[in-house]
Length: 137
Image (cartoon, rainbow, N blue to C red; front, side):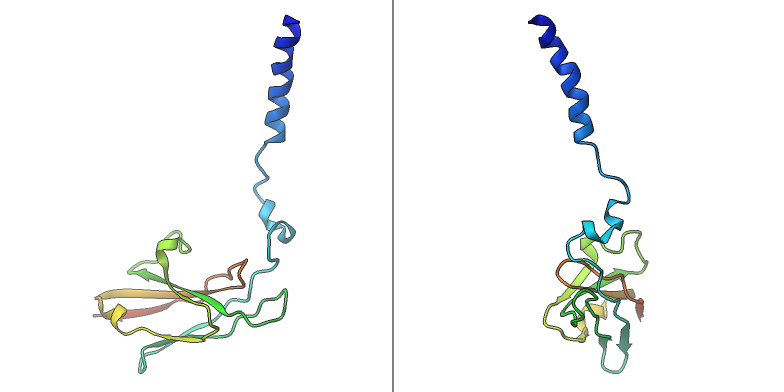
């Protein structure tokens, strides 16, 4: 009985470790392992200096062929960060399908304001768009 008591942990611990091994580094590269399939297309960002409006092209969800209605505007100040998708850079959310946004008072702070946008289909987020830099002297 005592031998089986000692033998049991020697077998169970290695088996338990193998069953709980971390996933492979490229596990999420396979779109079938991710809810939502393909990322939406990347919008193209524009800025009109006359009206102080950011606008962007419509993004398409490749899984459904429908237009994406959710956009996330990112804002960076003076430099582009190492982690551009960090939540602290999420500046504005649009979930009504609008393709433009006005920003007048937030860009009154002196410096370089860098904006980018992504589209979201509710499951996946597109790649970051081109960047627009607005300099406030």
